[in-house]
Length: 515
Image (cartoon, rainbow, N blue to C red; front, top):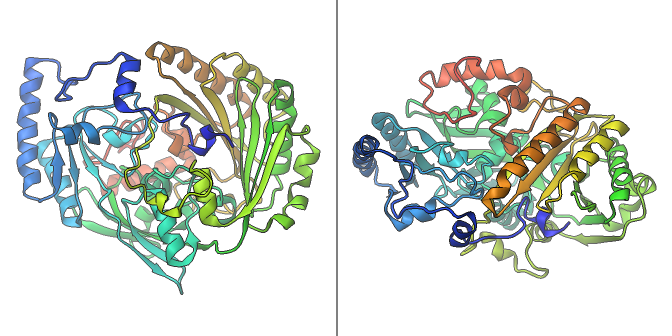
């Protein structure tokens, strides 16, 4: 796919200062723009002082407003909101995480764990001003059990370094996504779809156990045998609603054999209907060894990117029905390689890159300014002809080239859909695909236009789809029922047992009561 898809949602990487210039925003040196009055400043100063004194007892590195470390730490993937935390703390031990929870409670500030900083609504900064952000990137221990095919890892890994470490340890992997700077913790705790998920399940489906610091500061183990209610919640609803995960044990999968990446491109609006229809007809019966994603944009571009966990010679009969139901492609590529080469390609690295670049040393966090919405379409039928037509007409109404729709394939033959809807907190188990609708901009005046475009597009598709949406494509405008469905009430009950004071919360966290 093009660079937009390879970078997940990013068209380009913008330096922070360039972003500020484009947006016309002015940030103060001490980054306390959220403090607007003399009274507020005094309150914040008092809380900050108490918080600083308390955190100092834990020994972890910190960053407070007015420092370069704070300004640098505040850069996250989506620059649309850029909330101003009370402070950042960078623990490297469980005791320091426990201290951070204690200090946040003592100082009466909200708390937000952060792995990769890729929350679509900037919830990794707390989702509002004034939180203590607990940056978990210091938790990167890893061990691999070859006999059991499991890996125990710290929660601070980003996907790129984790892919490389697992490859080097045993040519195994977890079925996560493309963007190499995404943190594994938030990705896994919200589901985690990637280009091997139809074969191996979501990342959440491969969590065998976790250790987390809960609201009372206790380190708790959650797995099928211990605290199974918490184990249920973490697999799909675990991002800052129940505690701070410090360690995962994952089931991992052998990817030592050859695999094949394939892409087909169309460039005409008149081809989009048939190309997309061919995708969903084929997708309903695609073998689980193939994971794929389809792309549409307002200018008539369409493409499919797929990964077959097998040799190139075996691919043609597996995509024959897809090609039979789509227009002749304007171009295509098919390439056999190995797993780590695929990760480099999908991560947007130049051909021939040394795999060590996945360690992301001196690698800038990709940033953009965007809004996204999502919706699930059920299997096996997918969208009706009327639904496809309505979707395309709505998408074509926008003249902004900084918008696209992305369709991640699930389907009845996938191992994602073999899991019962109530087996984990991830309820979306009857879908043919999810639709991610994205618009991004570099001029602040474009924001309202793009919001309207996304709202109109989502509302157009909704009568032909489900009310469900993907929690990792979090959208502040969606109700919690869209993300958790029939699992919401059980998740609330678990919240009441484990965090009765709602210590871990953000604007769309699991609440204590039905709202």
